[in-house]
Image (cartoon, rainbow, N blue to C red; front, side, top):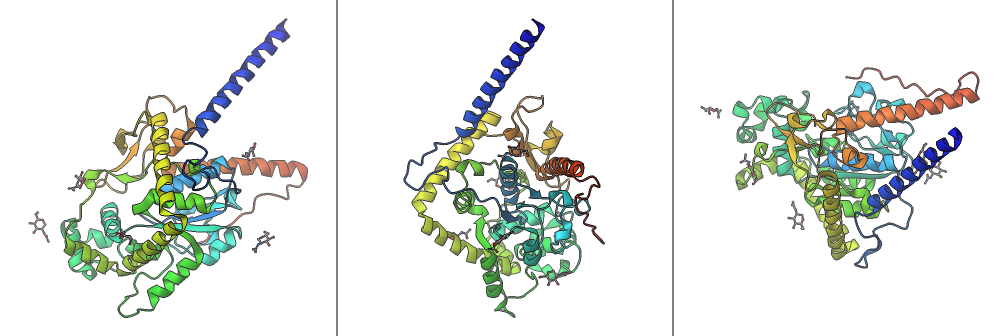
Length: 416
Ligand SMILES: *[C@@H]1O[C@H](CO)[C@@H](O)[C@H](O)[C@H]1NC(C)=O
Ligand SMILES: *[C@@H]1O[C@H](CO)[C@@H](O)[C@H](O)[C@H]1NC(C)=O
Ligand SMILES: *[C@@H]1O[C@H](CO)[C@@H](O)[C@H](O)[C@H]1NC(C)=O
Ligand SMILES: *[C@@H]1O[C@H](CO)[C@@H](O)[C@H](O)[C@H]1NC(C)=O
Ligand SMILES: *[C@@H]1O[C@H](CO)[C@@H](O)[C@H](O)[C@H]1NC(C)=O
Ligand SMILES: *[C@@H]1O[C@H](CO)[C@@H](O)[C@H](O)[C@H]1NC(C)=O
């Protein structure tokens, strides 16, 4: 009797989990119609998905949102993500040139890398598989500079020196405040070129050959340069490049400032000054804006536009499911779940984030991950991958009595 009751109970549990699983599965797939209604190819790809991706995460370019999406993709597809060694913080010892030594040994060998680093092609090739697709994202330099100026106003000495924190004063005489070789200088001058491994101090008037050469180099490595201004279009190009489903690029915007802490730059004089000070970034952006539209033309602008609409609708449905509508932006301190509080660069800037409805632990993992800020998500992934790695190592040890197959140790010397 006892045994059969136990059996019945087990059966009940089994039935319940099956129903739950089916329900989740169907919920999972219902964000968009599976067959494309507009003859531009299926929204679910027929090619195998490409899983080796190196994303150069640039600063203040909506790159946190792309990183979040790549982290979620990697988790769902069992792909290892390279994460920084503890000594490197949650970035790969940025602003130093990237080195494979900065990667946590428990995250080797990776197929995805998406945390901040200063690009170094040789070291990335050493780390990543040979079928890796390189991608990055750029932003129009005027909005970008305003964002950097505000975000790093307490970090970057060049900005701290300016009286009254005035961007106008800085731009009138940048060399009065800016020192190229001091700490955090890279946030104040041609930051995109710096992140891409270039030399931000080259003056295009004195050295006109430098930027075209640099652009050719970037083009030879990166298969797609996304643009923050055309974010959804960029995601459509991305998912087509990688043969991902539209579902793999759903997102909510992360790491934003509140509208009140944004300056609205409307003066043409200021725009000119910002572009002149960041002349390399401005030309870099203009170049890749041109190639972006060429790429859009190749896919077919109509197709992209329709797919963008499908993406937005799917993101809307997902937001409805997770937050009961568009998620409410909240100042970090008002976010109850500490795991969801974004990092604040200083008391003067308000980085807003999201909270999940209800006060208990969030029930839906996708919703939680969707709004998990980068520091917490990186920590979470590292814990998860370390655990997996240790289990694997333990399994190997039980097979080889002397424990020959311990994970390799990668000593880091002199990490700042
Ligand atoms: C991911 O890995 C886990 C454990 O290693 C395994 O149980 C699961 O089936 C894998 N999933 C996929 C989609 O490969
Ligand atoms: C970092 O990379 C830049 C650009 O490739 C190079 O000029 C510089 O010497 C490198 N710095 C170090 C410390 O290796
Ligand atoms: C990539 O590496 C694999 C083994 O890791 C090798 O078999 C393959 O030939 C390489 N492909 C290219 C294009 O180098
Ligand atoms: C800084 O602000 C104060 C008060 O608003 C003003 O009197 C002063 O002239 C400003 N200084 C500069 C260098 O703009
Ligand atoms: C900038 O514009 C946005 C939207 O138009 C507005 O909400 C915000 O308050 C403005 N910021 C400032 C500093 O004026
Ligand atoms: C990018 O290029 C397009 C097409 O030439 C142009 O309309 C648009 O203004 C450019 N965008 C920016 C932000 O410069």
